Structure formats: structure tokens, C-alpha cells
Image (cartoon, rainbow, N blue to C red; front, side):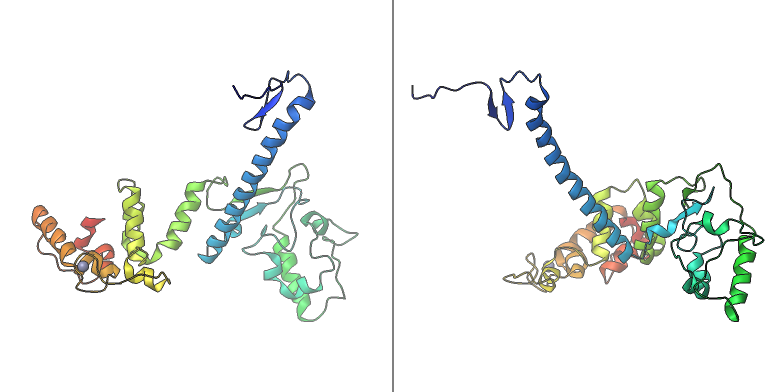
Length: 284
Ligand SMILES: [Zn+2]
């Protein structure tokens, strides 16, 4: 029959077939395969997290600023570099003192410990005098409001939530507020759960001139035979043309306006149509 004689165990689709699988050695190729798959998945996830972080920085959403340290015993909090007291990190509130600090990564616990007759343990590169001395007095006054709790660990709190717990919904709203700030009163509509997601995305893309109309594709370096409207051929296919000025689009709008009995269609740009807080809100 032309078939070859085979023997157990053999590998089929990367898995050993016919092996007894009773020893660790038999399972190791299977475990290795899973490990390889998982490490790829982890790398991709990490890449996505890093990219999301970069994107948020671009949007001026500085996620780390939303985390605030609540100090217990102070051993796990950086005295200068983490926000744990006052309304800023101490390195920003007292920059001259910070420059004179011998150990910028010192913990709160190490600096807040009483030292001989001093209330705090300082370690400066040189003796403090002049204007820096008044900065030190201000710092010590601020620190007088803080007290460490020796049997409690330091905790990180998410400042956007009243309970300090991290909730993705609250972060999502914060990002929306940054991202959609230009949308003014239509923000709520774009976030509204009654509007299907694909419609919201379409509105957002149209408002940002990110629809794949020919003019925009051409602006992004995509080689096209023509950038005129493929429906009417009367004009260039811009976002405004596709949504407003094209006679086919206008025909659809006029029919909708007539059907809903809401007057006549008189918009002169897609942003006016999509975003103005006027009768246009019907379309969101
Ligand atoms: Zn057209």
C-alpha cells in the first residue's frame, strides 16, 4: 500500500502520541511547548501595556500621578521621590534640599526616625545654611503632620476612587475626559451606553477626520488612481464631502429630515453636523 511502518510513541501536531506519560521526562516536551507559547503571549501583552502607556502619556494622562502612597511604617516608600505627604513629591516641593540629599532613594522610615535629640535623621552633602535652612524648616513643619505606624505596611492608593481601589472604569472615564475634551457637551453622548459602539467610533473618527476617504488616504501617502468622489465624481472625496456635500449623502440626509419632520438639512461641515450642540444632536 505504500505506507511506512511507524512506531509508538510518535509526535503528531507537536504532541507525543502513544507514550505512557507516566514520567516527568514524557511531559517535558509538552510543558516546554506551553512555556514557549506563554512567553510569546506575555511578551505581546507587555508590549501592548507599554504601548498603551506611551499612548496615555501622549494624551497627557499620567497614570502614575493617580497613585498616592499611604504611609504605614514608611519602609517601602521613597522619602523624596514618591508622593506621600503634601500635594507633591518632596523632591519637587523642596528642590534645593533634594539637591543636597546624600541618598535620594532613602525611605520615609529612615528619614523620619528620631536621631539623638533631633526629630528626624538627615544626611546632607554639606551643612545646611542660608535660604536652604528656611526650606528645611518648612519641610520639618510639613513632616510634623505625619506619623508612622510601625505595625502597618505602606499602601498604594488609587486617588481617582474614593476608596482607594483601582477601577478600570474610573481610569477609562479619565482618559475619555482628556480625549474627548474637545467634544464639549457631546462627550456624554459619545459615552452613552445606548449608542452602539460602532456608531460612537464612527462619530469620533469622522470628527477627527480619520475616516478612510480618498483625500485622507492620499494625505497619508497611499497611492490612489483618483482622489475624486467615487459616487458623484463632482469633487474631491474629503470627510466633509462624503458626509455633507456629496449629492448622494445630501439626498439621504434630506429624506431623513423629512421622515423625522425636523426641518431642512443645512449643515456646512461634518464637525458642525456631528458635534454642534444644536438640532444636530439627533444624529448621535
Ligand atoms: Zn460625491
